[in-house]
Amino acid sequence: MKIAIASDHAGFSFKEQIKTFLIEKGDEVMDFGTYSPEPCDYPDFVRPAAQSVAAGEFKCGIVIGGTGNGEAIAANKVPGIRCIVAWDVRSARLGREHNDANVLSIGERMMSIQNAMEIVDVWLKTPFEGGRHQDRINKIEKQ
Image (cartoon, rainbow, N blue to C red; front, side, top):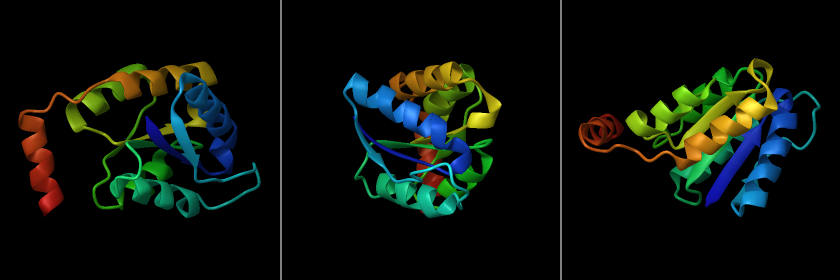
């Protein structure tokens, strides 16, 4: 699977570990930055990652920050992006099943790396239910 990944300084450590995890599983990962733990502005990295997903260059994206909230807000400003913040496996699974989320946002300050890896794994494996949810998504995206 082709996956875009990005973070700010507060999510840098998790980004590096998640990137390695995905590559070891055989996924193709494009790192949009940041490339160090030096303070930076998350939109500079999250927006290009989200744009690449919206353009169809990548199947999905993962963005990481301190809480994941700002990253989700920035990603959701890109037309065609449905980014969820997941703080546990259940919210990740439901975000895919019910919302067809194509970008996942997680917060490094909110969980352990083990929890983050589980969230990423479940989110990537969960299919969208489709049906009535897809009709609503299509309607919203056309507005």
